[in-house]
Image 1: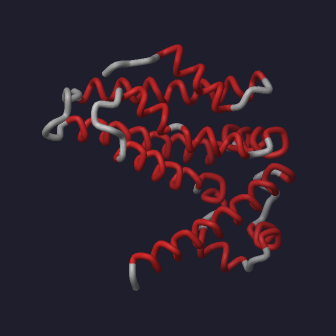
Image 2 (image 1 turned 90 degrees about the horizontal axis):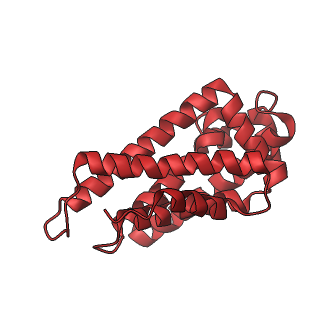
Image 3 (image 1 turned 30 degrees about the vertical axis):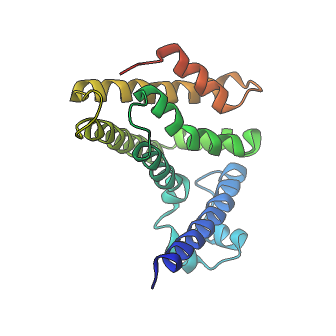
Length: 204
């Protein structure tokens, strides 16, 4: 199978996964996480339960599976970052997929209920923190490894990479909490930009 066919198959798979996840999120927000069954998700998505499990291994993954795609997008932005671009500027661009996803959701009907479900369901919150930690470490490793390449303007130390990335992720979490708590009309992207301006820019 050629690369073009593989790419088409992957795009189709991602589209189906998004359709299933959207159906699940709608039910979770309306009925609650515990009360929503895989059968209900399958019915809403117009698929069989078996088909659901071909795309998602568990109900938990229906909530958190989107982080895998976002992580891929973020790391792709890092890998394609222009040489010499300030780390903080690259991090701001890397968070764009997360902000875009949040702002595409119906805030009152989907975004806020889903955020509460994640933070108020112990198993989900634990898995969420684990995924965020893995993503943060992958981003840290990415910045550090890129800076060690021959021709880089200035190599980062491990401490520098870890600290800068941790500060950016701290801004992300702070923006999430503030956005939901304030109930302001501004977008999540705007809230995140404001949070990152408080800490940055960082010229590392």
